[in-house]
Image: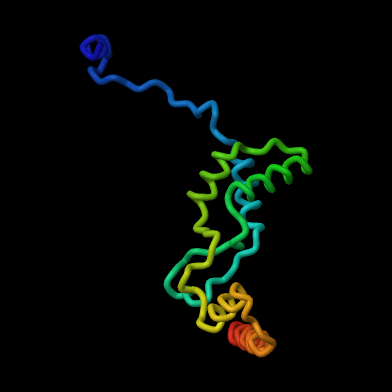
Length: 144
């Protein structure tokens, strides 16, 4: 077959046929719609890892499947045809640097102590007051 192509081509080099766009390619307007939808989710700032990572975080209660279900409902409300879940997942993974949980080192000692006491049902009013003061200081520090 290669010999045939070389013998019967004018220059001796096989010229590739015309290229065409794949039939199943996702339309750019649908890709843009998915990107805008993903951007609409509120980002959670990383506290201790701010300087060492460029990753943004979403609420830890979310995941890609849940986000896709919400997107699918949104498309139904707008009477649009949604993209398939694998396309949504590909866009999410390739075009966004997002995670769903805070890194384990992203919790200060006060917050970790509060969470442990809350899980063990050992939380007192003093702990709650200290936690509220701690959160107020944290907000002030972020705004400064």
